[in-house]
Length: 104
Image (cartoon, rainbow, N blue to C red; front, side):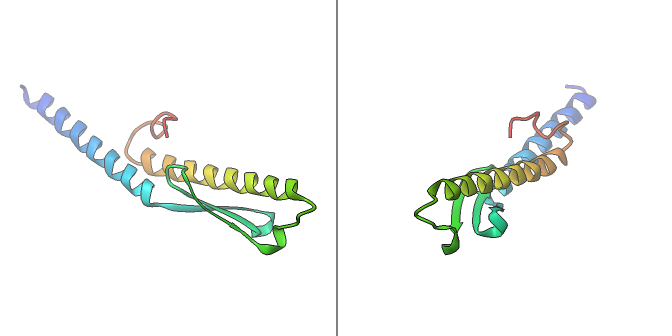
């Protein structure tokens, strides 16, 4: 194997290791989204997995369950979008155009 090929293989292995490390870090990251001025908060991992929901007592109105459902959806969307942005930033820093091309 020539010298340039060995160098390319080493670079590919390093990139793979860096990507695996970044994915592990994303799994450990916690990102919070909120709705209704913070009365509903959702926590997701850097991989957009929902790991927690906090609902303030003032959000609970038995006469308006639909509003609470909407607030939860908005908070989830907010958290997931923040998570995607964090993943794009972390993975994009590895020299992969567009992070992982939308795979995250």
